[in-house]
Length: 309
Image 1 (cartoon, helix red, strand yellow):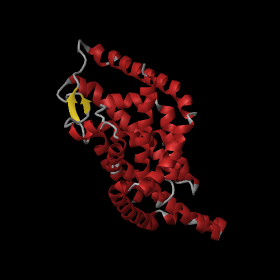
Image 2 (cartoon, rainbow, N blue to C red):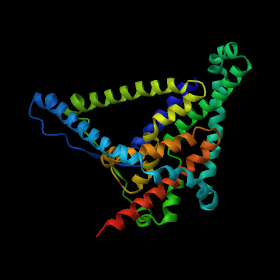
Image 3 (tube, rainbow, N blue to C red):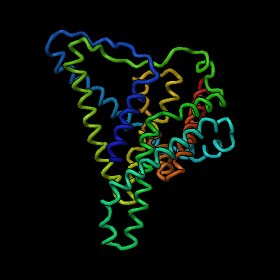
C-alpha cells in the first residue's frame, strides 16, 4: 500500500510539476501533406531530436561530472539555511509536512511490507531483524521524498534565496507573465495520430523504469542509496525547475538545458540524493538544496558576465 500510495502522490505531484504555474500556449502542428507526414516524417523528426539530445548529453556528461565545484553546492547550502532566518518561515513548514507524511508512510509500510523481510530474521537472526528495520526507515524516507520533491514545496525557499542574492528580482516581483508550456491542439489529426501515441509510449516507458528502480530500492539497506544514485540527474532537474520557471524559461528550453548540462546535473544529484537518503535529515536537505541551486545560478551568471567582452 505504501508503494501504491507513493505512486499516486507522485503522479499527482508530477501533474503539478509538469503543468502547474505556466502559461499554456498552442504549438501549431507541422504542415500535414499526407500519410507520409504522419509516419515516416514524424519518425524522422523524433529520431533527429533523440540524436541531438544524445550528442548534447555525451558532450556534456564527462566534463560536467568532473566539475568539482558542483559537488560542493549541496554541502555548503546547509550552513546558509541555518544561518539565514529568512529561510526558516518556508523551511519549517516543509519539515512538518515531511514528518507527517513520513509517519504515515512508515506506519503503512510497517503493516504491509515489513513482514516481507521476515525471512531475514530466519537467515541472520537478530542481525536480520535489525537490517529489516533499518531498511524500513531508509525505504519509507525514500518513498516520502519522492512525493515531497514532486510537490515543489521548496519553491518558496528558492524564491527567498533569489531575493537574498538579488537574482533578477525585477522579473520575479514585477513580472506578471508565467513561463510558457507549449502543447499541440487536441482537435487535430497530428495530435491523435502522432503526439498522443508518442506521449503514451513515453509514459509507459517511464512507469516501467520507475517500477524497476523501486525494485532496486527494495534491496535491503543499500537499495535506497542505489536508487538515488541512479536518478541523480533527475533530482537536480526537479530542483532547477522552480528557478527556471521564475526566469520564464519555457518547457522546450528546460528540456534542452537538461541534456546540455547532464554531467553537472548528475554531479549535483549524486551528492544531494545521498544526503536525502537519510531520514529526518532529508527534510532539512530538501530546503537547503533549493538555496544551493540559487548559489549555483549566481555563479553561472557571474561566470557568463566575466567571459562577456
